[in-house]
Image 1 (spheres, helix red, strand yellow):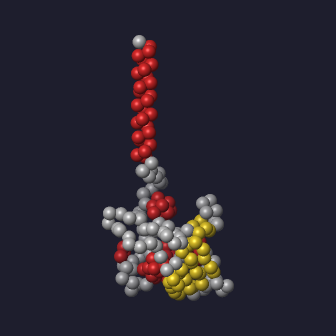
Image 2: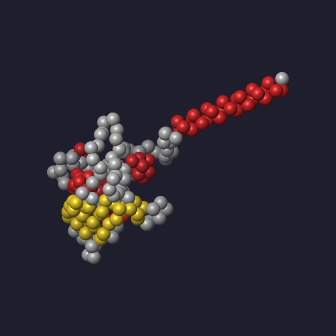
Image 3: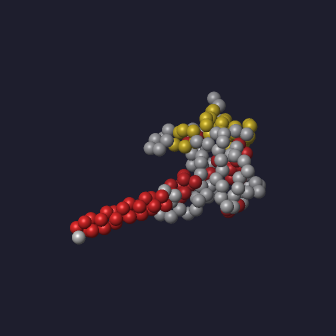
Length: 180
């Protein structure tokens, strides 16, 4: 009887371990995030609350530069490096090569990330005549709140992996503002 109970107990433990192993494999493919609220949306150009940034924007979108977690130190992200002119009005970003777009059932990218994407992203917000400015309502709260339309004089593609921003005036937090 005791031998039978011991075997039964070992069988239960063994089956439990197998079940936990299978469950762990399923969980490894699932993101669980606990937030103090629901994000308003998933486009950081349109939604700027901390809840949205923490829950979706930071996980989904890459930036030119990023803060090292827990500090105010910036490090390279989509931009491998950057140069700032002596007068503080020209920022040149040298972009990482080999960055792939995510693929979904509805979006099948045919090329890698390049300077055209950076120019498009900012021009869409800057130029009210841009064909994509009005998509999603045409209001870019963070961008406008940071006075970017008055600050950015020009964005130009230097080559496939280099983008230059020309500002109307020096702006000390310009790099830090690129990480949002």
